[in-house]
Length: 210
Image 1 (cartoon, helix red, strand yellow):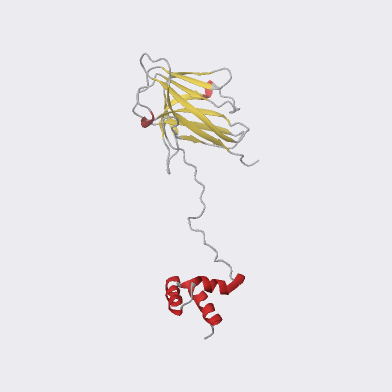
Image 2 (spheres, one colour):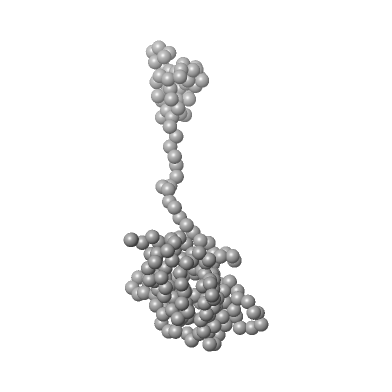
């Protein structure tokens, strides 16, 4: 067998069984460097294969002291459509009784909120076989400030921690699509005059079908 023929076979073997080829080359007295040198520039490097999982896009809003995600439900997310909003506060979202609830509305949320269309409720959370709804209205005074960027709710009596409550609103969605963060702050009975942060409802408005 001529040396070029041996080199060609060793190159083919090295591509599949590197360890075995190394032993054979050592036995034949031919180094790997010599084999590659004899091959010249005609041998292209092997193509590397990407290893990993298929591309997935995932958004995860982790809860921490500065942001806590709250559950909500909307009957329609399309812009300019009439929609019922159910902003939910579960028992785990509240550590104390609630004397006052304030909801901050994003500055760019260009929709009119009428206090007559807002109420505080005992909520029934929906699931696969039922829909989120207001089970019982909690008597409260509701005020929306002049620019519509704050909703203040004053229950007639402190709302206890147990049970799922929420704010129901009926309004026309804004024109601009995107995500809007509504923040919930609650004032507990006592001497503290300001509200503590409970969490946020991250609401998305979609283009819909024109």
